[in-house]
Length: 276
Image (tube, rainbow, N blue to C red; front, side, top):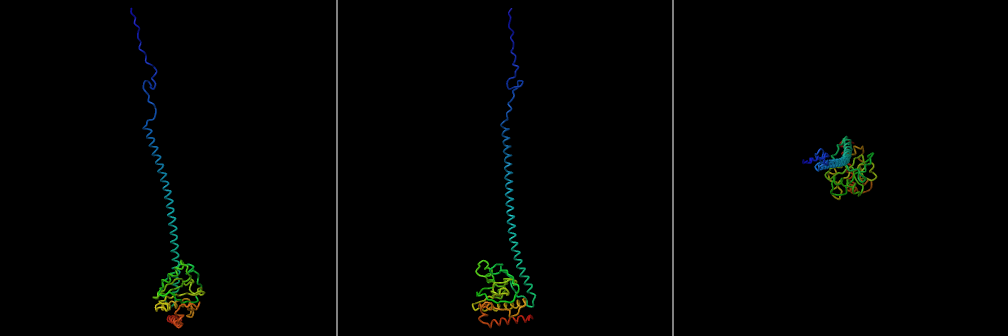
């Protein structure tokens, strides 16, 4: 009897192959390249937003500083302009108040333009003239120039420092009158009599020093008006010559009779208005 060996089928290995569970392969748990890219992009965007916010904050700080600087400059300029306007209003108020006061006499105030000099040590020192005891008549000594030109010369002395000179009033060739200094302050016109007199400068046409008729008539009117306001007498009206011996006003020094006539005309003006 032939006997054959029973072949046996080998049993499968009961141990799962490496890398599989129950015969199924398990993939490695490593992150994919797509995930890394998204994370990197997200991180980049976050960094950019932070940078932009930082720049915005810096720009806001710069804008605040710039705005504060502009506000400071505006305040400084406004203060300067306001101070200048207040000073001008003060000067105008003084002159207008003085004019209203001087208008109350019998003699009408002569037409005049109040154009006060800037307060400075060379032409308008701003020193109080406590009591007026006289009126001094002068002539400009520069033929052919008008009231405005002489007023501006006085104003320019604050910058040129050429000399110390000024006058309360300047009368031009056409009879126009400019007030340069309030009569409550001294002018630099009559040396030691600056402290108690009001000065009148008269423009001249030529070297003779003789006044134009319009200049002469305004000088008579203005002098009489001041005499009445300050309670003076005609004898309180003097020439610069009577203070220092200087030939001023030249024509009235060269021709004393012309000076006597001027005083007589002032007196007649006062009488005509019932002051004397």
